[in-house]
Amino acid sequence: MNNSRLELVVRNGRMVTPEGILRADFAVALGRIVKIAPKITEAADATLDAKGSYVFPGIIDAHVHFNEPGRADWEGLATGSAALAAGGGTCFFDMPLNSEPPVLDAARLREKRALAEEKSCVDFALWGGLVPGNLDKLAGLRDAGAIGLKAFMCDSGIDSFPLVDSAVLREGMKRAAKLGMLVAVHAEDDALAAKFTAEQKAKGRHDAKAFLASRPVEVELEAIRVALELAGETGCALHIVHVSSPEGIALITEARAQRVDVTAETCPHYLLLNDKDVVRLGAVAKCAPPLRDEKRRVALWDELRAGNIQTIGSDHSPAPPGMKTSKDFFAIWGGIAGCQHGFELLFSETSGALDKELPLFAAVLARNVARRFRVDGRKGGLIEGHDADFTMVSVGEERKISADELWTRHRLSAYVGQRSRVRVTHTFVRGCAAWADGRLASPAPKGQFLRPV
Image (cartoon, rainbow, N blue to C red; front, top):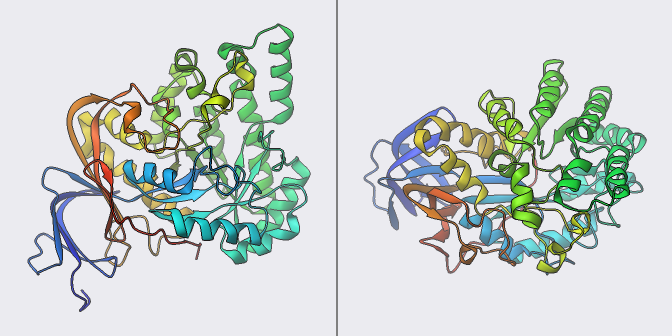
């Protein structure tokens, strides 16, 4: 332990690690964990009694759309980070496309970084984009600290962020490999999606069931196959985001066995909801790839428990109410606003066996994310020398999630009405409270920028 005065001691908690649950105290100085021991008796500026709670490592949400600059009316860095803190998140990686202009060069990344340093209450990293026309900007994005490069294999819905065809993706992956950058892809085949959409519209169908029929699992699998082939060919580190199907995970698992450098992310909504919820809930449950049938939802849990899913990210993608209202389901903006309650509901789903399940979540929500994106020298676990990022989670009586709880800019979420036995009571970023007792801390921490090392 260093000689700095202790800022905080957390006592009597059940500390969650990927290896298991540890009953121990830990001490914080200069924003980092400096000691873990069965009992810590040294004096500190503050103490926190975690008796009866799980102390979970700070969740790193590697997939959010907070939309600043340019679309803060959809969501913002202040409201988005507050919602994430309320859900146990201590760090986010913001996607490049819903801000306007999108993050396609170093100047745009620096602009977004300055806004996030001013407004975010949790730490953050920033994705850069990979689109036709910006291949010569990738080195600049790396030097500015981009956590990785994001590409769409289908229409993104944002005109200023066009999709990549196989030739552009191949060249982008070649350059990314030379630059030591990871590439993430939204894996849906554009031609197949267009074909199936046209078929539904030709029948005069525009409802939720028609949308689901326009995005069968085949659309996802075809794109995953292409991305895996290109990653193997170029030697690029590949991260396939929001995988919705066990078949997609199986393709990735097979590629990993062939030593392709690829990881799979899924999202809480694919583990918690199914296609019938899209019909029942409507616009708030529209996303792409879409929610799958119940058999696939259950099978995705099997893949998670088998260790075949490396990370979970919220893909928090809100929009104003006007964009979530239309008789034409195809015209509704897709995206589930889930960074506040998605992780909590995953815990609640397994609340009958939390001592068994929480270590798995500590891996896919913290440790694995930090390792994959090369921030594990600071983030990713309750470890001496790491940032003191943690959340306290308690289990109690079941409650129904209400819209009044939401800290996002628009109180729309597919999780409103869901029932949970788990509650996030505290979230700390570098030893400072960001969320406590149902409200944002005041003053809240100022988010710091992370870059891969």
